[in-house]
Length: 267
Image 1: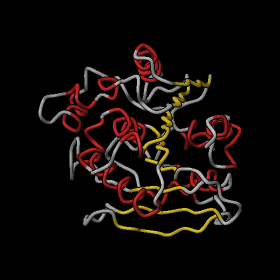
Image 2: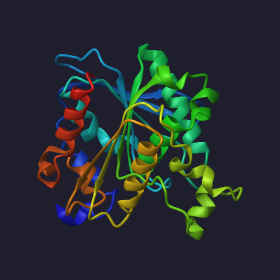
Image 3: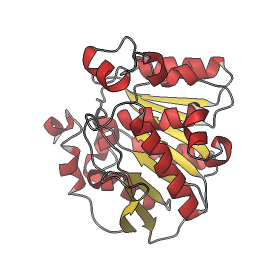
Image 4: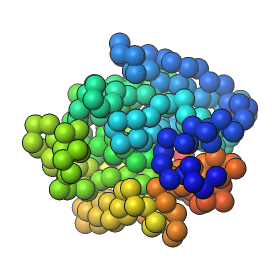
């Protein structure tokens, strides 16, 4: 199994090993008019928590990914009683920054209004980038008609790119088409009054360097923010999220650490 953890794409194979039990799935709920502007909603069939909905944004370099491949993440969380939503969002080259963040805000608005409850944001890789911008840059949710403090109760970033200037030429095309690279960096918006944030990273990650987590955590702490950091030695980029699939739980204790942090926060 280890060879296809070298990239996010093969996680679809892992997903197909995930049992279709423990949840009810409502597929392709629209939040916009585009083909990729839909989300799937997972509700636990067992005891449900009176907790915010977890909205999970997947990774893929802002160029790849689909919600159907991340059922294994939803199942791990619904088994613990959480309601989970996983949106698709538009990708490059159809769009560039900030369109996929705007899609994230529109999806979040649709989800919290449908369920009439606030959210916990969670994301891996490029999805963590989206989740963190929605959390830290107040303008993103305000543009979608949401109050940030009332909507986002906590955020979990898994192996996310938060401070990665200078941009490579390829990333500049995606993230800074107007030349303003700083606007794409979550660390630009670090603030002390953000909701509680959990940052997780594998020390063997060569796709998104662990310094992204370390730098954002330092900026949040300096601003007086509430941030927890968990790192994993010898865990690579895909392994830290792949561990949510039960057959790959040996890779990292990520699921237990996420659920434990949420429990301690009384979610």
